[in-house]
Length: 183
View (spheres, rainbow, N blue to C red):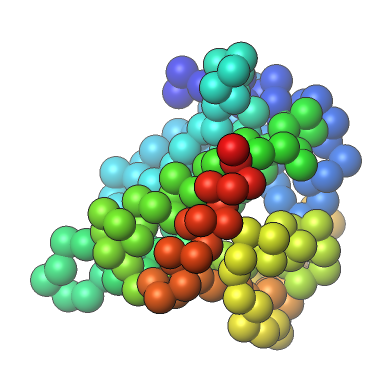
């Protein structure tokens, strides 16, 4: 909750790139969103993060682990999705998101020992799809009518979802790639 004001500032720099991702604009809406994420965290559904620019200590966005899949009687997940990511306009196309992905992937593969990390996005979101390929994820296909659209005005429609993944055997080379980018 300490990051709500910073998230609001980041979310309102330039909202033109949030066409496929709901990003709360008003403080009360952001506070409600963060409260909901924290409730989901308490039940093990997500692990949310505020993204902070280290150089300025400024909040620049958010991301999270979601769709955490575990086997019965196992504490550690075998697979997880990284998503719900959005960045302030000033942080887009910088190494901030790449470094966040490096940290998230490293924790998933090296601590949790998952076999795969999923990434997905609206099939129409070319910017997001390009970013997933840039970090080394493998395109697996488009799942038609996969989930409700997150686009304003499409509340009763279903979107086609582009699916990407990184599997454990790919992680070492992807790690080296990400480390090169963030240096």
